[in-house]
View 1 (cartoon, rainbow, N blue to C red):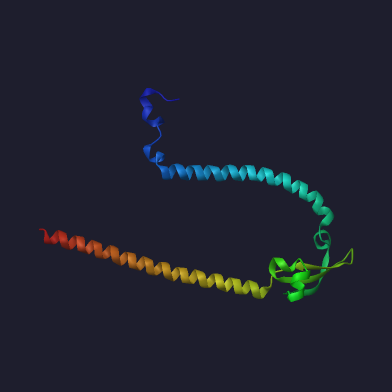
View 2: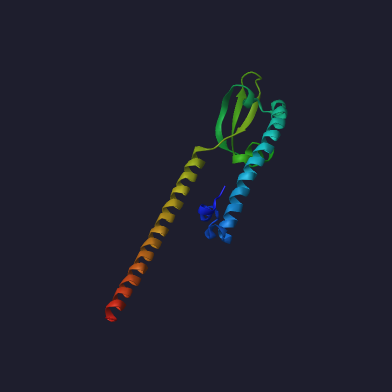
Length: 157
């Protein structure tokens, strides 16, 4: 509760009522509420999916398996006939030990991972160079403005 002596402490500062700040608050609390309500909805869906997933889950999720063929790229016919190929474009053939079934499991190739890593490193290096150039250019601009200001002040004396 506010008393008259501390009335100024109870007021919302005018800086908080700016449209940009209000929009940011609305966005923040909207995302928080979406996260909370979304998590509640997803937990209900996950419980229902878990019941059906136990029946339709591939054998490699339920039991031990042995890799029969290492991770390799999907070929033309494989990518159309094997659903696991659509996820990463690479599959490995596995043999489940209890049921003795052969299935295909999606995997990530080490060559693909290495390519993605170097691509990421290249982009980060390029961004570093771009932003370093921007910083140097901005610093030169500010130095030029400061020296012009000092020169004008000296000339006005």
